[in-house]
Length: 53
Image (tube, rainbow, N blue to C red; front, side, top):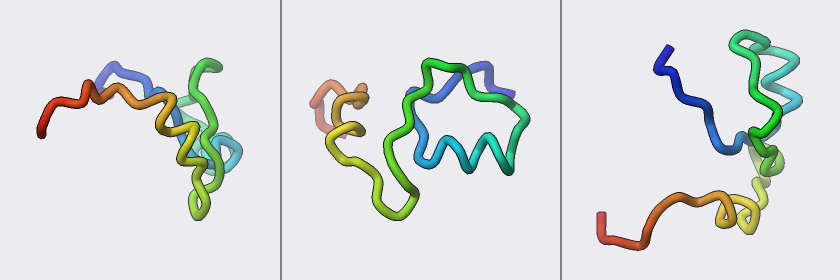
């Protein structure tokens, strides 16, 4: 709806099973489970430039 794709998502398999539409592009990374996301993978995909919020 917004015309943007996420960089990463937790539990990609859950999205593809339950949500289905809109489908996720293949380049969207799976960063672990909803309850135990992989923080290192999230940090690798972070787009924050370090400036104060």
